[in-house]
Length: 141
Image (cartoon, rainbow, N blue to C red):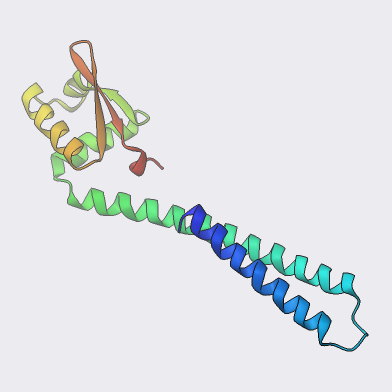
């Protein structure tokens, strides 16, 4: 659920509650005060807005965690090692340092990095004679 979807849902709830409040006020006996109906509608809007905000946050977090799990399942064992090594150093690492850290040849690591980049798990930026590898925004926690 995107922010735009949550905002439109909240606007719909506000419109429906305002209509309900107007109907309640217009067709009731004179025992209801306009301000009492207005306060009731405002309370309902605040509750609905709070629920919408919580649902938006929870659904966004769940979607990110699920995407990460699915992506990790599609990685080979060596790709997962490279991905987790980048995660361990804060989400950004130099490719030449990963060669030494993971004890892999340059060509093997280069092929793994290209696969991870093609899958959208990392981004690669040239830096002098090596590359800076960063975890993609979709996979950051």
